[in-house]
Length: 155
Image 1 (tube, rainbow, N blue to C red):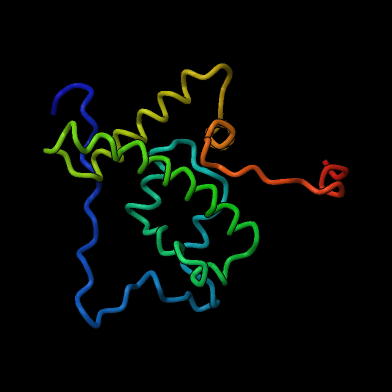
Image 2 (tube, rainbow, N blue to C red):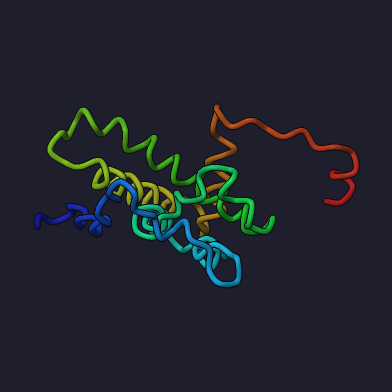
């Protein structure tokens, strides 16, 4: 490959044929979704967040009904990853017109890598969660929550 070119994305599983059941939709014997174990702390890079969606099928939690089995902490962990993934997709979309020969997954990897580089250039050692907070703070589309007086007192 050429220097600086992003590595090829990992292979995606083949599409399901009609009547096939997605194995990610099956609950583990304990009644929990098998991906729940992946919803701990945020990974150390934006690229790893992207891989959790493309490789591990984290988008299985996209609909609220699929998150019913999640604890509040797992739901929050998923929401953080989903915000970062949506930001990656947003940044990869404009690249569509520039490089038609690249797949959209490759463009997502390029966007994730550029976000990791942006995070690395920030003052201080900024974690992925710190970067996510910075993104949300500067996102004009992100709605600010109004805190009640009891929430303000607890802080």
